[in-house]
Length: 330
Image (cartoon, rainbow, N blue to C red; front, side, top):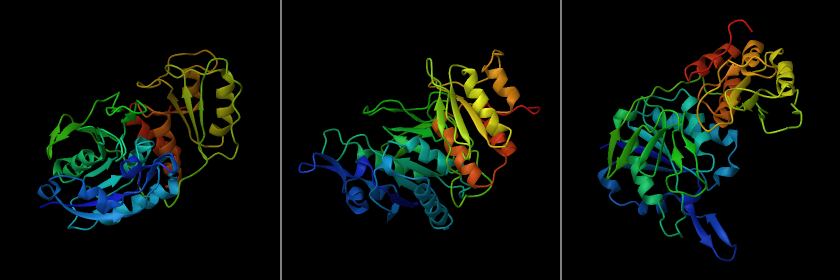
């Protein structure tokens, strides 16, 4: 029978309502969550790891890399067939992509949470966890990078987005579509993907990496000259006011990575507009176009890539795999 390591970190899936406090707080440890999962013994043997009870909105890059180290160590064990990370959903699209970038052993890694606490009607934690364990035990997912298992669906970490604050079906893959379905302990694959990974696991993230977004009639952006990188969420296909490009040029000229993405929920930026601040000017200036990576995932790439010592060219090559890249003659 497959053996799966399950790392419990907290999040809504671990929460109960505390009336004296007036809301949900993390309280359920791994053993309690596993006890709520029906039929798990027929799917896999479990090695639980109680890492913590942390709301996802509190997670740091340091903690994400610590969990990444645990994943690397567990997956390196020959008796472990896959791993699950149980966490809150608030930043799951970022943490999953962070682990997707790490050169982990080629085994299934599945990230899972819940949209309802254990005190609420419609608590989806047990079913989601059962589905995640089933996916982590399926060898067909070994080369699919990190996946997110929510609401009976599997999504690739590179594309998954949280699209609604509270809906059960909040997680979507707007560019490539879901990877598969999982129910009753069985996985149905709908497509395949290829994970794009860094050359090494960074000891720490390169920070700060601010995100500046275009809005109607914005103030000129204030960019920290000490930034380790910059992500610009442009309008439409990659257009900004001229002041945004002026600020970014000062970083680009110092070989600090600047990634251009779009504030649109799907799609990618492309050269095509030659007016001041237009996408073609960003391309000519040497910005890296992120492809289908959104601003949140682009920031994760810059922070972890910088921490791993990745060059501008290496970051551009990663983005090229998602339909982006960088001019060869900036």
